[in-house]
Amino acid sequence: MARILLHSLVFAPDGVSTAYLMTDLARQLRRLGHQVTVLTTTPHYNTTPESLARQPMTPMWSGLLSRSDCDGVPVFHVRMPAKGQKVAGRLLDYLRFHAVSLAASVRTVGPYDIVIAPSPPLTIGVVAWLQSLMRRVPAVYNVQEIYPPARCTRRARGA
Image (cartoon, rainbow, N blue to C red; front, side):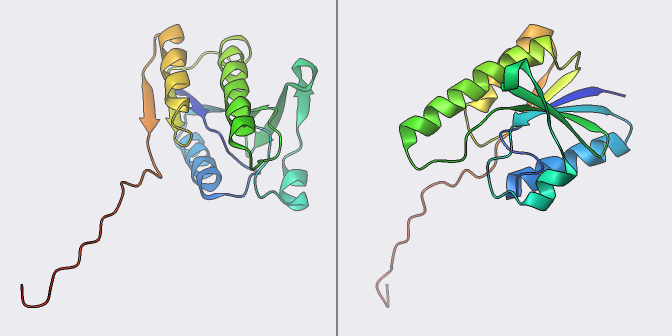
């Protein structure tokens, strides 16, 4: 079976749709016999005290990285502040996440045979590509939540 690195901006115990999807994917891949490791951020989006208590984190790298377990799946969390409103601050948070997660994928995560990375953010695809180049493994970039501009036109009656 394959050793899979699932690299996602959000994962359990975050409470958003992408986190639920990626958590379900990791659990199912593990049930199918694959060795799954997740590289994500610290919980920062719609968390509850109950979900945080179910998945306690152990600090590593002076708190820059933490480790938890989600139903037998090892999860490495890059420290991420709560989601802010300022675009520049969020951009810096994403850049730090990408840099630290790239280093963690080399130094801490262990070997993997494939990288799976969902959008958003779109930039995570670049990091997945770099991770795949460094380990000489394939990468799957799952683009979701991309909506083209919708144009509504109204035809004149009788036309």
